[in-house]
Length: 120
Image (cartoon, rainbow, N blue to C red; front, side, top):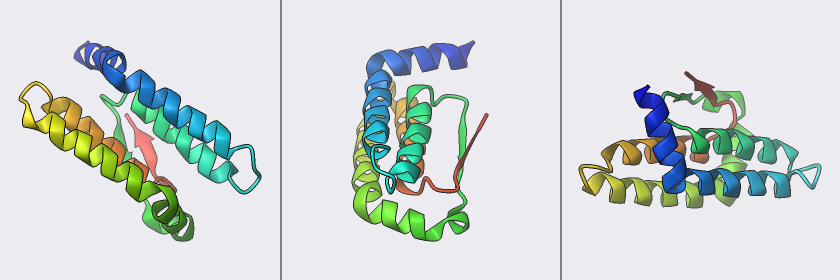
C-alpha cells in the first residue's frame, strides 16, 4: 500500500512529465532504423520513471558494451547528470530523501540502459 501511495505521489509531483519526455524521446528515436534500439531503451527508462518505487535496476554492462558507450557519450551522461542534480537537491530536504533515491535509481539506468533489467 505504501508503494502505491509513493508511486502516485511521484507521478503527481513530476513523474508523469518524466514518463512523457522519455516516451517522446523514444518515439523520436524510433523514427529511424538506427535509433530503434535506443528508442527501446528510452521506453524502459520511461517505465521506471513513471512508477519507480518497488523496482530495482540490475545493470549488465558486459551484455552490450558498445551500445552503452555510444549511449553514454551522446545522451546518457547529460541525462544522468540532471537526475543526479535533482536527486541531490531532493536529498537536502528530509521529505525529499525517498524521491532523491528514486532519482539516483533512474540516473543509473539512464547512464547505462543496454542490458539492464528492471526487477520488482
